[in-house]
Image (cartoon, rainbow, N blue to C red; front, side, top):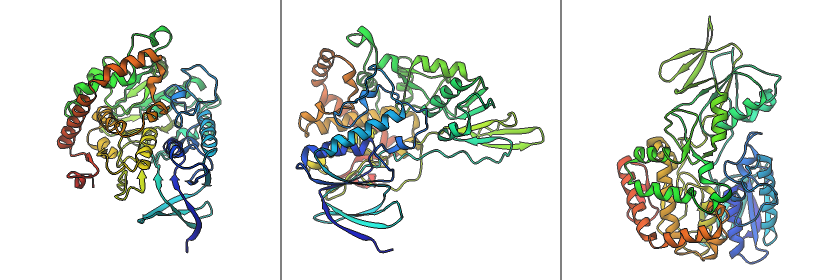
Length: 490
């Protein structure tokens, strides 16, 4: 099919209107002239990214005000510790889009699927399909491919058994599992945040029997400790950044098990005994107790299949164990969407600097909103290809060294942010709405910044050594995009 060429020349094209794309647009509005033409391409029908596809009972796992674009405040009036529902997050993202649109002339092509791009000396040509499947080409001075975590909806597991019912979180409501009309036993597959949300939703819906196939087990940072309330916001407890600072001083790139044990003894919670994995999710002690008390059995194993036998359905587990379950049981696929998968590598910056990508094959922060915000500053300052940021292949990290995830990601974020903050204007940090330090009063935040300023270069160099040690020990690509280590990234 011949592509229809759009005659409009855009200052910027942003692919993806989730947390990464909206933060990128917010920052771009600080540099582009008022009324500049900006093209948005997104496969959804409105802003919100993955939140458009999320299961009905999803909630944020951090206080809602720290999940935004730039410094755009929420119109929601709720307690500062409130965990916003999925529909409330969608409404806020639509609000952010409207605010950003006030200063930019935005052409939003909803229902469009990005296909490819070609970077030239003066602009970038972008190919995309519209909702009817027609191909279009667009030209823009810059392109930001804000894929972020590139989350897709988990489908039900394909199982051999005809005696069980396989489903997924986004189907629970229509399948009747969230009401008291169905009391069939349920096995939740997974132990991450989706699994925790699902168990809590099922516990609230009925008195059914709930089992958990927890794999290697996931632990969570304790929300009660990292987001204290009352007078403890003024003193005592430890902020998220302070907790990471303590952990990263202990992490040398080769001792992730030791650092994980240290963190679990102080700052984490889990309904699973001796958990191994963590990807930064947060849970409260109350939520942990709800899950622990609501689950009748926990299997530290991985589900391979469910087979029908003369005696009834049997779960087949990776360990070789087999376990009979009742006929008519539900199997809910809550396996993680951030696990290893085969994805083509895309550098976070093109050689010419006209294309920037927020993705997990070349992540610079491990947090898509943070990357969308700060990398866009570098792009418009023409520093995107000159600041020697380290880039990490997240999927290889999860595949080869899953226990190291929080400490490698923390080292990467600390090192790269140190470089970025040397370049961007001081207002960039003030307008950065994802900064969880804002949970604490100004005097406490100021005291911490003064104390940490003197050791900033020492911390930066320690994190760099840790990343280098980790990459050498595991073979996971983690090095500057340009320079001697360029071939390692590729």
